Length: 113
Image (cartoon, rainbow, N blue to C red; front, side, top):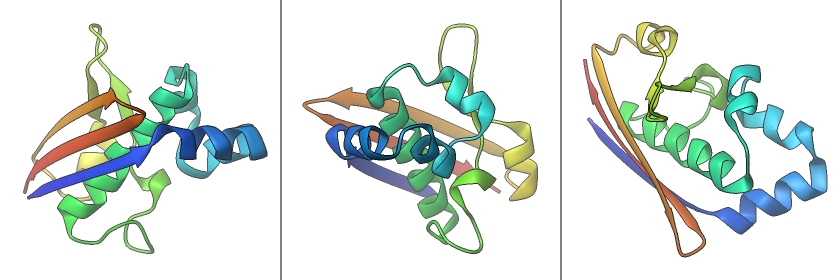
């Protein structure tokens, strides 16, 4: 299952400027907020969670919320979905790639059940 999402970094930046940390708490858990150093990072996490939900075939909604999906980073900074997230959705393996360029963040996700 494959999911892809792209988001304007300025959209996330405007949301953060308007609502502050409340905006981040809408789509990031506490550990993710600690990893988020900029609007660019936050936009990448947003795109990754949207891409994950699309790969599931549900989109963000009642079956899969932003806060149901948790992202961490390994020692080299590579993002990955936590075991908790994979177990919740019965996913055996997940691959995640996030990139930023030209004012956009994009994420691609591959899930194997």
